Length: 150
Image (cartoon, rainbow, N blue to C red; front, side, top):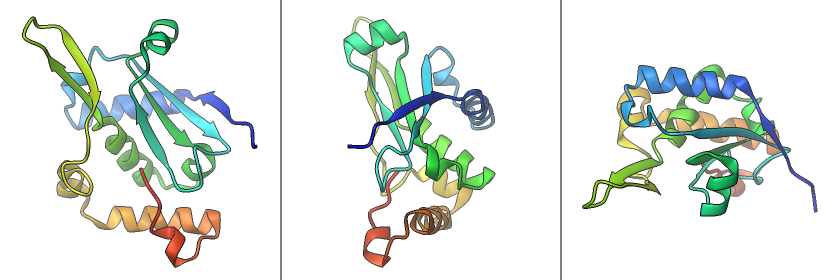
């Protein structure tokens, strides 16, 4: 089994701040995010992943959401695709309130096969570009490239 390393990268935080500001994602203002690169990767097919931590991980890690990116794939992406993938993962962050006003955190599923917000801004071609890069890095055949996920 390949050992995974988790790398905190300031560039991820800067990119998240940029996306949050540009996309007016004000609901994330008080949310503590932990952004990491997973080396060599999360898996063969996963570029990014948003995770709601367990109570223990939230307590000891002091963050509300963990967002991971496969390092080898991330480093192969263009700046534009990095921004789109970051936006995609941030859109999974879901904050609601119960009847008493307590904040509740969950992972928001895609509202279509992707997020309509991303398609409105970037079109649908961005994911094909992402699959092409991942397939190239991983030497995937056509069947395997269909399994690429964010």
